[in-house]
Length: 347
Picture 1: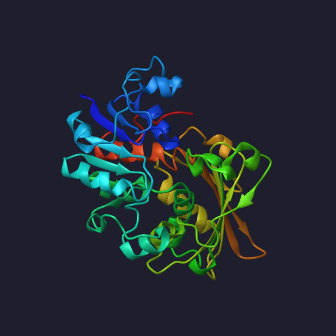
Picture 2: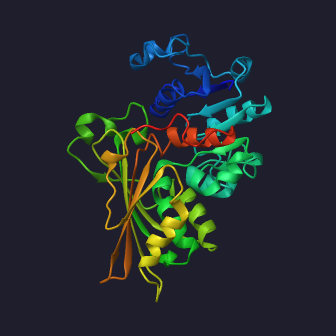
Picture 3: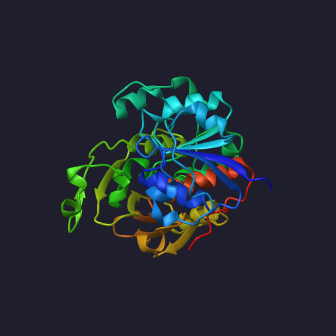
């Protein structure tokens, strides 16, 4: 099979580095372009010595110029860029015939007004919002197959949406009672100079942030509302923890009156028993980040608190993997008719 010529735009950040790690060894991918304004002209192996001697590691970084990217023959491009920046180059690459998988927030929301509310500026390309597909493979596989623009989900949303969607669709829980607490590794904040992210500021420390209205709430509530068939508003409390990568999420919600708690496990099994990257831990299981980092797996466990009538869901994923780079590759595989697991079967 001829390999698919692929570009990474914004390849020098943490998510870009994860995409490089995966795509340089993906059996059906030929990496033909990697962009970085700061590193332009340098080989990938010079910026990231871990990739030395891998095929393609001597490819030089280039400027993020749409014409230059298209001239490489790239059929698809991953955008690992900040929100507000990705939309412009996404538009340009779509005009040049590339498939685009955007890992920013620019196309995750279907409503431009909600984007402006949560991100503080007008949407840069509202005409594309109706076309963009929210790229959660376990929920939107058929739509992803036909898409030319994928909005790859955020890391926190993936850890919250996947456990809750089957329960909301089945009407098992009261949407008004959902509370999600998430803890993320420091790499989730991106590769940037920020005093609050220095080692001595984060080590031996756990703190909540972005409350009560973290930006990811917008896409979380959008997707949960679609699953429930009604508007869903939740409480979401993110935390920063002193690890490099990983997200642990605990979600609580009241079971609807008369619902047998066993239905929770049945709904999760019905939704994900055949999903290659969802590992169900069953009743009593507690997800642990050490089991998912450096993989595309999300682990999901659940409990029932008979005293409060609440279901307790736990999930764990790698924020740079299932929460970013490897999930985007999973969507890429679907678009190009490859097995979802291609290039992603790591333990």
